Length: 383
Image 1 (cartoon, rainbow, N blue to C red):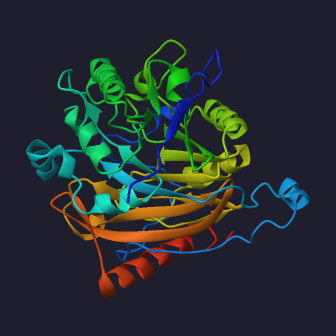
Image 2: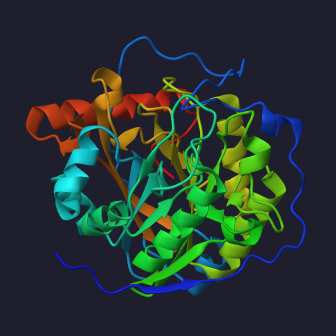
């Protein structure tokens, strides 16, 4: 069904000096994974996928209660949809060339029914530039943005370990393509102010802020790829003070604050220590939703101090060899201001690079399996 029109705004993040990279920022993943964090939780031996929880916050009773409880539901309900990693390689490239408007296949129907849909765009949008010295580099033509818009995606984060795969030329082309397509991207920019800046959109009278950042960067490229005061690049979650300042500023301007992160350890379906350390800091700074991807498989989600945290959305429109990396889906959250009043997982399986929604007993099984992933997250099923 058609969505109501969005009133899109952006607001500047006021900062003048971005902290220099710490040593930790240089100890990051190479290529698409390779996190060597010794504190990472071990991966379960059994492949698991997909789930759903649904909770309903109690209706507001008095203005005084609302004032004392910032997560008391306020305003109209808004449905947010989140997908994981997206690129346009392999079979997906052929689909894009054939018809950008139908590239996402049937999963587009799920995204279009939401009021606002967000994914991680894990590719440079360029046909120029020199590949970065790394194992995997991804790029796509500007028609990829047509595919995203046609599928119902409203915002994409490009803060990840592929956003600058084709250097500054590729990054500038990506920004220019997004501007020409009038398609909002977050987590990247001509400087740190732009990279950490939230995209603010008003839906049903609710102001939704979306911030993108990455906790995954190749160690040899982290310094070069991180945005600075007068330096193009992306928002790094290792510049923690800058990221938290962006969340606090968004909190002052929005009813619901979303942070979409590239984080986790490849092929590990429990959150690693640095994910679990960052999530509560983001919530304390004012985030209401913290989601992300990178591990190429699904992790668990749930509530943390009233906010909703999802540690890994898996692959979305992305090549896959099958098995756990083909388990995919869409996370649907209903928000009323700061209150996350309902959550639902729509499971899918990737075939030919495209997530195909599951139905019947297959869907029920996938939902139960994903729900079990919460056990190693420290998150709750209810607020």
